[in-house]
Length: 337
Ligand SMILES: Nc1ncnc2c1ncn2[C@@H]1O[C@H](COP(=O)(O)OP(=O)(O)O)[C@@H](O)[C@H]1O
Ligand SMILES: [Mg+2]
Image (cartoon, rainbow, N blue to C red; front, side, top):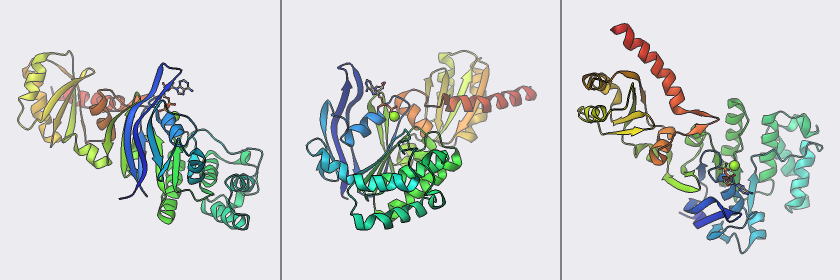
């Protein structure tokens, strides 16, 4: 397989103190959709800025499309496309003018500009709005325009930094449909950062999870989930007691038990069948349950597994959701007594 992005020992420290990216290494294959996943402040934008030759690293090496990023930044800029997390379309220009300007900036041959602009406008379904000022566009239309701007020069590698931030689920789905079509047609490599785990799971062939500037895991979404070794039953009890952990571990079929934050995480290949025995084990240990929830492995779980912390997405964690389920099971438990 041909490598499209190669990163070795990359670090970026701001102002000599803030270690935004700390010695990361990874490779992305040509044509792959590679997700760079992590919570706010993890170091995603810093990594994109370094790989797109906008920001000098503190240490490390990187090549994109075979070109050394730091020795040949101008060539990098010609070969890549970039869609930022912030809106970059010029509101005072029409959609068509935004695209024509980008075409001129990126040196698209004059004879080709018209056809490319028309085809992209059509493709992104902004053809009808092509001659309206970008300020009149909806959020989804703006993002599609910016995607079109990012690929007007047919880049070999497309960098997307949280491209769907602020879009509603429908807008997000639409945006990804266009990206996937472009990949199919142009064999473009896509490097995308996102803090939406579900999005990364669906779009990306491989992922790297970054947390506090460190890469904590790399692999395909299913490889990462498989590493968790089964379902996860989360049990909360009235108090934390070593007897509970021992009792849970002793239940046949349990692969492992760990205490994370204030909940016991029980891993088991067929979690739902073990719930009655797990509940009984707690009761026998003399500790009251406050909630039980079952989860199939998800990227939320992968993140928790590799960092020991809950993934926070817009302030809501997977546990917050699980607790709501737990409250339902608690009510169910009471009615049986
Ligand atoms: N220009 C800067 N100067 C100082 N610190 C910065 C700068 N840009 C980012 N940081 C810090 O670096 C860390 C990583 O930021 P960033 O790469 O923007 O993360 P993400 O994109 O994952 O949210 C954060 O702690 C952030 O506050
Ligand atoms: Mg960012």
